[in-house]
Length: 254
Image 1 (tube, helix red, strand yellow):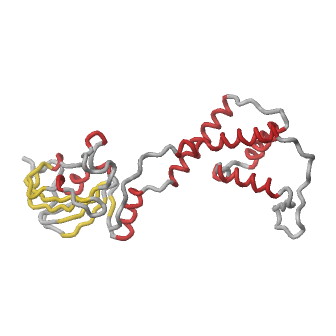
Image 2 (cartoon, rainbow, N blue to C red):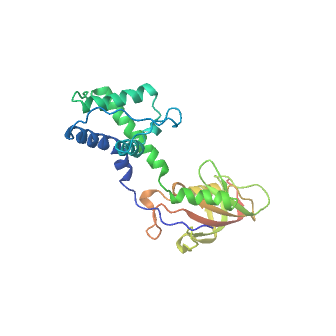
């Protein structure tokens, strides 16, 4: 099983990335207003250049590269604007450069906020997530199955009979460990009699997939183990927990 490191603390990076569009636009506007305006220069296309591609001369190429860098850094292409929307955006830059900047009215402010949220969402989706990567590795490399709730499990020994329900009382043994294989003695029990509904959410769901004599590995994501307020002090908060469970007996509800 692939080890997993403790999920890092939440970062402020999404907010910084989400605001980069506005900050870079302000920076470019300031630079343009402070710099002397050069005389109009016509880009020099090369005869052999592909259709629709303009190749700038050596003097102007750095400016074109800077424009590409700013567009990529601010995810302009990922915003999927229509040609008319992008043309309007370009005209707004030109208007500011020429000293006739347009006011940021309510509609423009709403668009700014929507774009910031869109960029933040894209950045968040690309940030490495060790917990997500851990469960993906389990599915791809160890044949572990996933339920709609997010529980991951693998039956290692089939039992007999019908599985218990949430209303039943069961006799089970279970041992817990961290994703890197370190035992968690405080979460282990041997032949304990317990109501299925009183188990951790992931354990309760997993036990209901077993038959008497059955054994399974249950991999609980944080949402199916402990609420944030009651997370055990000896376990890093947000860490997945793996349980080896054996169902010994079922006492049906009266």
